[in-house]
Length: 357
Image (cartoon, rainbow, N blue to C red; front, side, top):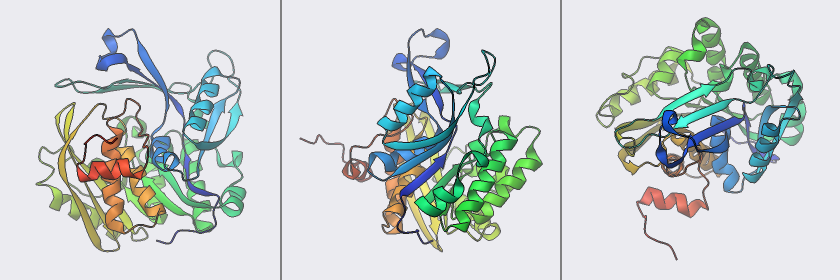
């Protein structure tokens, strides 16, 4: 995998940006009256590692015209050091378009997290390649990596086509393609063949493929270990076998990665990761991490992995930085990490939680 040089942007992410509201003090939704609101999307969560650490990042999205929520989201993206580009869509009255709401209970102790997605009328479902000048973005400005998520590819028939056209344009202009499969049963229901074809084509031209055991099996039909196994350390060999089968089917990619998670409680996980790059295996053995809010940990992992690739580090460090970025994300009340610097993330990898003065 060779990164394109002389680019305006290190990383571009297509996304449907929306709102997340979370009860205060780790309480469940049904018993809460006070919430914290933030801008959110899986793809912007990934991009946050690079944007907070100083790399140029851009978000491709769509907004509801004259919406105060859209104004909030634009300000939020700017505060996260991200450029954005997106069409303004007329709301069309009170029953028209809006930005998605993600209502999240972070869980606590023996009570697991619960997330409710309210996506009716979601404006991000209108994402269309004709609304973006792809020749300018990839040809004139230049992009080193475009990162796509299966959440956007599966959002609607329009967004599936959008992701395909984005991937094709990136391939034409020498931009590396990262694809995190992110399977969601509710989005695939009744559209299995349509989405399998879209995901397979994107995977066939991707340079970086990321997914857990469920993602690879249900999106790409690759046999793997049972989802949610009790002992992830004992299953590392099975995960390696799964990734080897993915590589056989999708040989264009040079990086394959998956996270390993064993849930002890809502606030304590065993966290690990596996990566294969150009025939070389790298493993972060699962070890215990303390959790404030688990949502976004996987996105943090991908964000750290991509940052390491963009910095052209030794591949072993890609996985280590990704593991630590994911662990960092779970210590924030936002569902994305906001690293102060690289040292903060490396300290997590090294197990150094001592005070710094």
